[in-house]
Image (cartoon, one colour):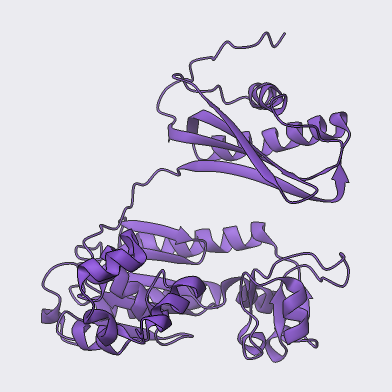
Length: 367
């Protein structure tokens, strides 16, 4: 693709290939030869757990992220289950992000394994985004021995679509000249946001690809799909003016725990709240944030889930004891726990950068 096809933005979307599974294969090369499923083994924990990812050998059997571990076992009975090691994945993700920063600081992290890079102006003063993508992929491989796929376009939506087009280790360019043809031929299930439920409705409306979508009026799309219909109307025309948001603050920090053995004892619940409070505060401090809203989530024995929240004008002090005391206050508002609790979560939200000392929220006497 010629560089003059990029009149405005030059955006690269980097998506690591089967990231967690590939890291596990680095640790144990034998995994490369067999189907690997990154999840807790459902045969050892009563059928619980969700698949985090799977290597390409396991994907051939239909195993993919977000399905239950028990379903993965049925699809791929000879697969090896490996529990995820998120500390290791986060460390590897940081190495990859350090590489990104050699090229640009306009980086929007989507997850540990993917990010958008605005390289319209970049630190290497390279005008050709294809060359930049090749350099980034090569450097990731040299420093981590992991492969990545790159999508290059003038918008975030198309860059993301492009990175998914040739996996693994692919590179795809969608220029402004090529975007219409690409979008017309794209199967409707490949449009971002078209999930299982939306796909059923699309099939009912006989929308199989971008061309079918293009023929729909804006009013009809909004009628059938609400706000998402308006987004689809623009996307199929290559319209996506979203910037690469590189200074986004995390909207919330939350930690939750699921219990195989249900908790019904009040002191056990309080003990867990204290542990989770410490985890939340550690993460908030690491990210140099503070918040004004605390949310408690409880999932009962029958899977009924209730949340309670409280917000303040001032920032809540970054002290786990403060969070714990606020959690105890909120817990008193929940129905009885006597039939058992299977999940407890604490989230701190309405977050802002910690640019100055916290104002102590003097709600309790902590002495």
